[in-house]
Amino acid sequence: MTSIEGDTVIVPLEVNFMISVIINSITCPFTVLLNVLVIIAVKKRRRLRTNSNILLACLAVTDALTGLFGQPSYVLWRIFLIFGLGGSEILKQFNVSVMSTLSSASNLHLMLVTFERLIAIKYAMHYSNVVTNNKLKIAVLAIWIIGFVCGTLVALKMYLAMLYIASLITISCIVLVAFAYLILYHETCRHRRKIKAQQLPQEEVERSIKENKALKTTVFVVGAIIVSLLPLGFCLIGTAIDLFDTCPIDEPIWKTCSMLNSFVNPLIYCWRQNEMRKFVLRIMNIDGDTVIFPPNVNCIISISINSIACPFTVLLNVLVIIVVKKRPRLRTNNKILLACLVVTDALTGLFGQPLYVLWS
Image 1: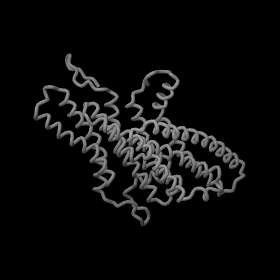
Image 2 (image 1 turned 135 degrees about the horizontal axis):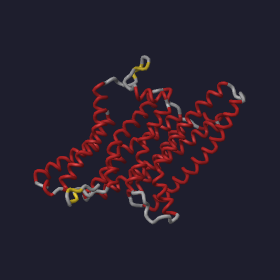
Image 3 (image 1 turned 180 degrees about the horizontal axis):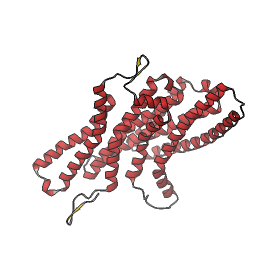
Image 4 (image 1 turned 90 degrees about the horizontal axis):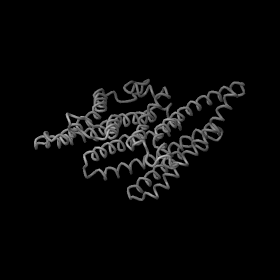
């Protein structure tokens, strides 16, 4: 971002860096909060505790961790890079390791969600035997083990091994999801024809409608992931076919788009599921004789204030640091010490307030 006063450049910063810092600073607390609310909703409401929703809640865990660790570490890395500070490489390594773990886990969770929908619709008679709580727990545990292996390989700088594993996971995810949804589309069309011809009993019709609704939710989730990865996919495909040597889409843009998917997913869950939406919107209410959530008004107020304030805490303090760094007239000892104090304030907004929101 470049501003000019007279003939002097005041703040010669890269626009994309600042845009990515601002967007991720604003969205990261809401990413954590919304995904935590989705997890709580599935845990607290029995009607939401279906296998499909449980797997979506597992996916929400990876999205919440993206907002808690991925986005803040990315913002901090970019800020250090802008200022030319020495710790930027460490932050970059941490961010890449975290995102490798979470990206691998997200892709594998997506495959698991798709597989569950495939069994539920294509092999409904065998669903209860194939998809059990114990099998789901084992599958989710295996996913996180693979994810941590990917993150560890990046941390150990074993990039070639990580590339092979990541490529295998990505290709498997694309093939399985595409193949599964072709089958699911064929099955849903067949069910619709049977319903129109009145060849199914009423109970089977109701079950089919319920399963199709859950399927549509997963379709929207998959669609959101595809859209968020389009900039990265464009770069990879264009480079592979020699369309261009360097991707025209800058790294901050495609990284931010991929991380924003963690913010969009819980919005899709709430939009598609009325029960979940009611829980999130009425988190202070009482359902029958059972308290859904402790009606602590002060707690909700503090969560709301910190969620709204924390991105602006980061942004405003970063701007103060930039001004002191770039303007020679402001580089007095007094102002430099104030800028050091501002660094602690920015870190409070980057880590302290999001962690408080999550804890509350």
